[in-house]
Each structure stands twice: as structure tokens, then as C-alpha cells.
Length: 163
Image (cartoon, rainbow, N blue to C red; front, side):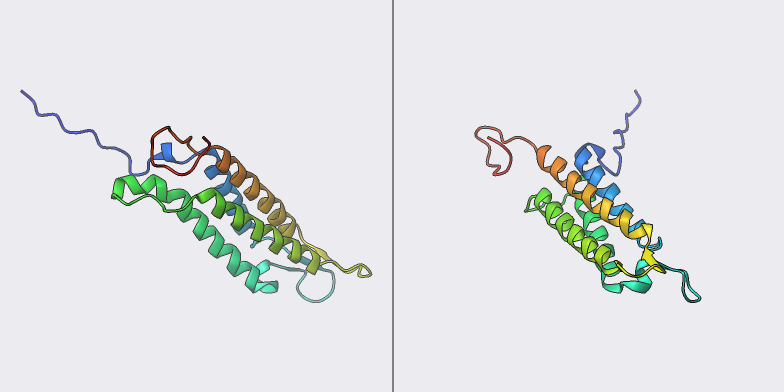
């Protein structure tokens, strides 16, 4: 009689990552990509375009930190069962809504920073526009995540979800 090995499961449990998580993760990746695109375009001087790293270091740092936080919050539930980690003690949609709101305010400020009414030689680059759209998509993903939370079962001790 042959011995049967137990079937190996995958390292990452994709069943714990929902559509809202994918949308938030995609929007977060797009905000990081926008950092490398031109944010400020000028027809004066030796450099024609400036990226977010050269023109707004604080914004670049905040976006990278938020990307890493989003990556952690999306992947933690998928990895926690494999590593035997406890579930997060807070609801991630609220954190996603907060991060998305801060990103939207940050990019709105950055968009206004490059606005020059009487200037014809400078303009905003498409990187800051992509970042603003990605922040809006981040908020939409957070709302989708909020709506796809598991329902609360009668008699269970879970305190989240709809009754």
C-alpha cells in the first residue's frame, strides 16, 4: 500500500483577497508609478520636466509609505492563515478610506501648487493628474471593500458587518 502525501496548499490564499483589495492595490501602484512621471513641465531652463521626487519630496515619501501600508493590509489576511498569525484587530476599509482621503487631499494640493494663471511657459505634468485619478480610484476601492465585508452571523461574537 502506498503512502499518500498531504496536498501542498499555496503560500498565498487568494480567496481572502477581495475585489476591493485588488482595486485599492491597483490604485496604490498607480500612485507610485505617477511619482516617476512628469509633474511639472517648463519650457524654460535646461530641464524641461520635473518628477515628484525632485519637486515634492514630502509627497513622494507619503505616497511610498501609504503604498507599503496598503500592500501590508491587503496581503496580511492572505498570509495570516499560513503563518498562524491572528486576524487584524481593526477593520481595513476604514483605514483604506482614511488613506484614500489623505491621498486625495495631498494630490489636490499638489495639483494647485503647479497652477500658474499668468504663466505660459509652465504647466502641470500628467503625473500629478494620474495621481489624482488614482487617489479617487483608491477611495472607490475602499468603498467596494466596505460593501464586501462579511455579514455578521446571528449568535457569533463578530462585531463588524451588517445585521
